[in-house]
Image 1: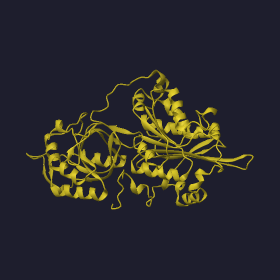
Image 2 (image 1 turned 120 degrees about the vertical axis):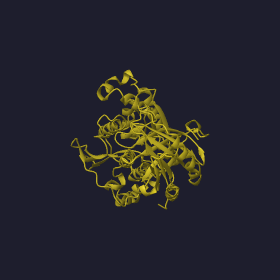
Image 3 (image 1 turned 90 degrees about the horizontal axis):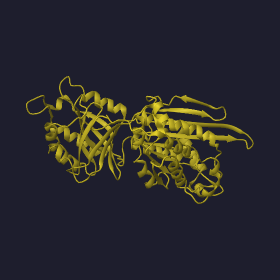
Image 4 (image 1 turned 90 degrees about the vertical axis):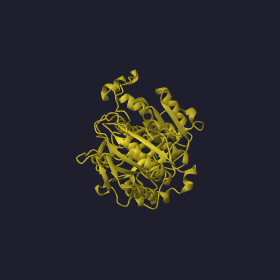
Length: 459
């Protein structure tokens, strides 16, 4: 096979997500050419959407020197024992994963596979992709701020490589050609572009953000990121507007009460700000299938939900799919006459950071208390009293969440707004950054990091 034959019937895009620490290990190894070309295998979880296959890097296995059979020889730049390939396929099968062979063409802004690469691929991937049925496997070459890939599915060449994403803050995408695209100025964003740079507009336009829960803070986030110029917004909520939302949900009117879904209100509001934003309404709640399928289409997730149980579900999904997560919430206490306290949090979770389940926020005892206080029938009890809320306090947290979104997409703060925990005192008017606890060795969500759609119990 050669490059021109890599077409296949399935034209879905192929994307690969990887944590920055794992990418650093891969890059360090394959770009060390002291002995000659180096390579190795990424074992990847797998997820599928209507338009893309997403590979989720889990493990890195460099080709060991004792497996190398030829290096810089007349027949091959790098060759190794077939038994190592068999070991990698077996390990991937145990994990419910796929294999991706990675090497580098250092300095190339438009890396391409060599004839030697295609010969090795023809020997390996048609058979390996049949053994790892239902998952995409293939090869990847890294260049200078760029990457190219070729992939197989159930024995046949398949898909079109789109990008390698390093799930960091900011997000970093490596595509077949290094990003040399000129800015695409939009007059409505002139002041923002002056502040954070002309390339920010194109990055925002290509981004899709999912917001889960829009009764309070989530509605503010939708409003602000629409003003910021994102290209796509996925709004997830299953409820109609109630009268109590008029005091805390931006975009609502009295006419919406009992007649309009909250997602429809968000669509209407966003379209009045910028009709070019593609708004997708998901009238469901996590963990329903429509909600989870929609989350897979997002670049990052903002959670503004009312319960710890919902946070646990969203957090676990984001770990499985290597999605950045921004969570906001506030707990208001009152004696019936006066506000006693208003303690909120903004937590930003990246692929390498502790997740929400690692923190006291989603400790076992917290989840157990909520399950006891809010049994399944609680949600359909019309007499159940909601939690106290103040629209302006929700707005403070939402503004900081929107700043975190902006940094993930544009890098305006050079990652300074990356993973972290910010504490908000709505009564005193302060926002302070707290240290995240270390990752929990027994965290059930982190145990599924990168598993994607196929969670295996054999790992």
